[in-house]
Amino acid sequence: MASSGAGRGSRPTGITVLAILILIGGVLSVISGLGLAALGGSIPLLPSGLGFLGGALGAVAIIIGLVYLGIGYGFLKGMSWSWWIAVIFFVLGILGSLLGILTIVAIVPLIIYVLLIYYMTRPGVKRWFGL
Image (tube, rainbow, N blue to C red; front, side, top):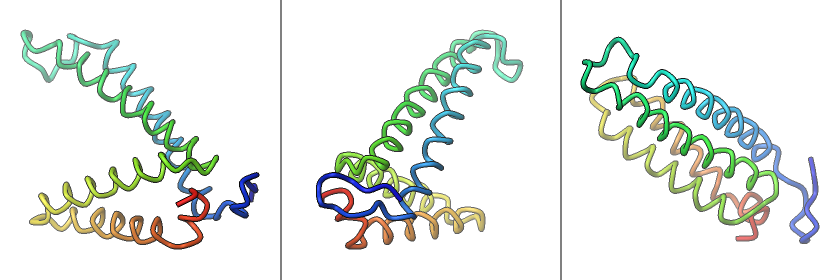
């Protein structure tokens, strides 16, 4: 557990684990985005006139991956902006899960996002982020 210089104490272990998972997700998103962008119009499932969608989806995946990399870095350093962006993403995840609640598969992510928001609002976690 690394300590910060701002009198915030030790980084919570859960934040370290989340940071690593978020960083891995960011790297995978960037790699998949690069793959989609490189494939571009050669994605066989898309009609010939819609090949540009592969490149556009790749660009979106790259941007999302870069945001995740930033959040992961911010988690490790205790930057308050990363807490806010992560909580916004978790709330959006809850909303997305609620839209798909008719399927049993949507219940698992819903529970995970609710637990993540609960964890992010614990006093020790908020203290790490200077909130």
